[in-house]
Amino acid sequence: MSTTDRVLRGVAEAIEYIEGICFKTGPPRWIGAELEWTTHRAGDPAAYLRPEELSAALGGHTPASLGNPEPRPLPGGGPVTVEPGGQVEISSAPAESLTALHAAVTADHTALTELLARGGIELGDHGIDPHRAPRRILDTPRYAAMEHAFDEAGRTMMGSTAGLQVCLDAGEGAAVASRWAAVHEFGPPLVALFANSPRHAGRDTGWASARMAAWYGIDRRRTAPAYVPSGRDDPARDWARYALDAPLLCVRRDSGDWTAPAGLTFAGWITTGRLGAEDRPPTVADLDYHLNTLFPPVRPRGYLEVRYLDTQPGEEWIAAVAAVAALFADDTVTDRGREIAAPAADRWLPAARDGLRDPVVRAAATGLAELACRNLDRTGLPEAVRDRVSGVLSRRLRSYPEIPKRTASGPLDRYPAPSVEGTAR
Image (cartoon, rainbow, N blue to C red; front, side, top):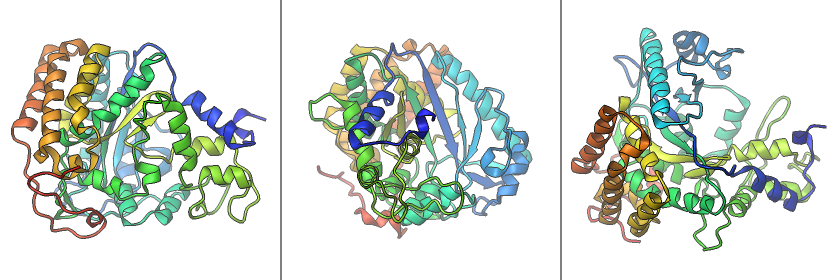
């Protein structure tokens, strides 16, 4: 029997397993990125694409979810994936420097753009689809089960959102807890700084980041921050508890329906040994899969997966990735960043709604952007790229977009519209 086939005999065993895999410690060395975009027919961005259009454009790079058993990576080494609503994503391999990451992702982004353009398809520039309501175009058991489990906000997340993820090493020893805390505390200011998704499906949402609004509308046991600012400094135990207390989203089966029993948490499955009407206790493989269905702003996957940024237009993705990398240049820089971010560290909702119009969030975002710019030389990026990054950050602080008055209705209405003055705690 393989390790993944092993039946979990109790909650304590599951906690021990999660704690053993969630943070791989060692000197910070690697950095990675995942870039996701909505896709649109050139000249008719509100039209819905068909799966066969994406397959024809991607050719040998078409992923397995669209029927290609042996997909080829892009020239920079990143594989292509397609999300339920037709969003396209490239995932970099871990790179030993930001310069290497920039070169690899730029090569892949260029190749992907050219492939899609030959098929009459363009990449979107925003964190949520400004033209269309969500529509699932991929038919897989996982996505069918997710759609069944989600309400409208979840379906919007599945079919309309596009994010930029940054992946960082967890660090060594006691530094893990500090880096885990820092990457969460930087979240609200960076959400606001890079928010670019105020319109969805042809209407103004009243949010700076309607993408984050969609995430906020999903069951918070699956999407709330897993960071617990308790002074306990035990992020592995916190993550294990978070994961086991989250309800099942879907359950892999050899055939048929992957729908999970409503409300059943993974801990509940372990305790009862039953999956609804099925008499089947969970295995390690089931737990691994469950961990992949949790969507907090930062997810530990051995490394730190930063998930709270809107996708950025064109080549501007490097500005967001470089800002995060610079803030983790060394412990002294990170500690200073935490001091700057502290007043806004819990303002996730105001950051997504009001963006840089929230004065507390804006002050923290300005301080973090300035700190990042002062340390860009530590990233190893060429001078021309550093100048581009500084220019993007300066422009966003200087001319952040106004948030139009809400004209949409639907999943974003579960939170009140932002006020001009900002939102109090």
